[in-house]
Length: 446
Image 1 (cartoon, rainbow, N blue to C red):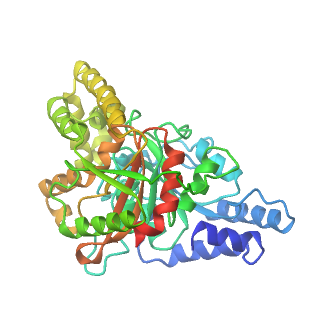
Image 2 (image 1 turned 90 degrees about the horizontal axis):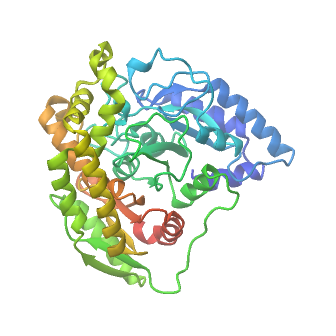
């Protein structure tokens, strides 16, 4: 069920928070894929559920999210246990002294923390493979085990498999929107800085953003309000003029699967029939960014290397995923002068793109392909890194240019796998994006 459906049952007394939480914990325990969760918080969850049930019986609800279960990506601090960030090298770290700020805010809204979900080690992959804790399997696949997408792999699979109504993710290069697209659910990446980041293990602080993975845009809107500590969620917008959407003609469709293009274009056609104005034009920044990376290296890699430099030089490196180690070490090549040049170019490109787009929305496929099979990616490093780069490409534009974005299912492509429709807006236009996304969701889904 969606958050909205569960909330209606909880608030009216037709569903008990303890029974709901117990059933979710039992279902997680029965589920055959043991790589989805890294930690279950059964004792805490049942205590929080009992407190919620008591409040609801006594008419003291904390709001529409009271009693709603949530899972947390394994890089949010949870009081009393280590934050492992998908890595065994942190398993013996000191337990967190308190919940991450966002965990605490949603607890104050009455939400129930049921567990922490698996992820790419240190959040450094768009694929979602984790050789340490296992790789969650995409529940939409009917032919062969396929990747979940990363790095918020377990969060997406937990929602797509129906284990929880919402799970929290982080997004540095696409780590919410990619697994949302691959698993046929909604994933919202907020503008960087929209939420408190205290107690969240970083990857690249100039790119890291947060957001929920859930079943509907309305669910994301309700979570967004609680994460900002406000009582009134955004409502769907009825624009005074036809909605304007820009579709890039360069970059995002290169090498795209035909099934992905067909599903995306069918959604665009449906939007046009409702009166949306579609403009197709080239984005100069989409051509310039690959050139910038070729010249100086990726921004994310430079910042990840700075974060993990001591770890990579010590014994911990032997216990890490060799692919994560190899990719992170590439950041050593980026000099201080290179890093400053990247930041300067980023400011220019962001300003130029904002001037080009204005207050219009931007749309393109969340990922240029559907979720590929796991086995070939495990077998060959070259295949893995090529797939990882292509998987991260479309969403990575939005991270570099500081956009907000929401991935909405728009149909299926090869092997009947889900295709995501990525609707984005410029920095700090989250309210308009979410309001329009709510209004357009049914049309996009088809």
